[in-house]
Image 1: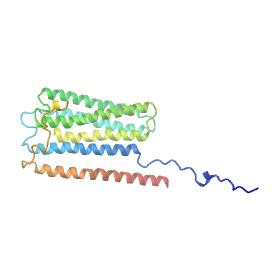
Image 2 (image 1 turned 90 degrees about the vertical axis):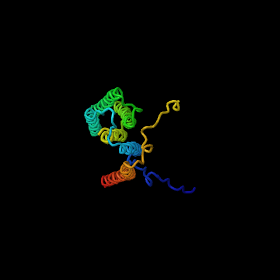
Image 3 (image 1 turned 30 degrees about the horizontal axis):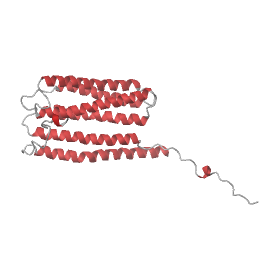
Image 4 (image 1 turned 180 degrees about the vertical axis):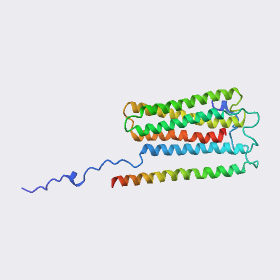
Length: 197
Length: 60
């Protein structure tokens, strides 16, 4: 009878690797890369607007409707408030109290879009269209593109809200969604400054 | 279908450029657009560095 080598428990030699949390989650990295491309896209639009505007002795060009600077300033404040509410929702997420501030952020974002639509109706009635002038073309191109991003951001917030209600919203997903909304909000004052003022 | 909707692209910086007054704007925007990616990438690199340091400190 030969002596069989003793069986070795390799789990003792090589313990199972510990699950490690990445320093920067994949969702966040992906969203940051996407937001970078968006920043460069809007940078191109603002650049084109700035160069074109510099060719005119006065802006808006004579005969063009005046943009509603004061009403849009109020609307800007509402959009900034939505970012504040979303930040609060992020702080409260771990405690399970993110629902109310998240709904508030969605309501403020919705108000911003509706107010802009109302503003656009008035401007179109006054004669400012995509083809009425260079001023109109740039206004609707830049502000309209941003409005599309706000709508997309609202879609993201709705999706986050649904996952939160289902109890399936992870911290990393919430962070990635919030980054997009912060981008949309922080971009707007820059566009307001360049396009309206 | 999009061909049927063709219209002049008024929102074009190049079509009306090069008249003299826009040279400063060209320079300004060239600087901004050149530096923007560097600032973005540098900002994220700085943030990731902080995250790594915090993770190492938490791990002891």
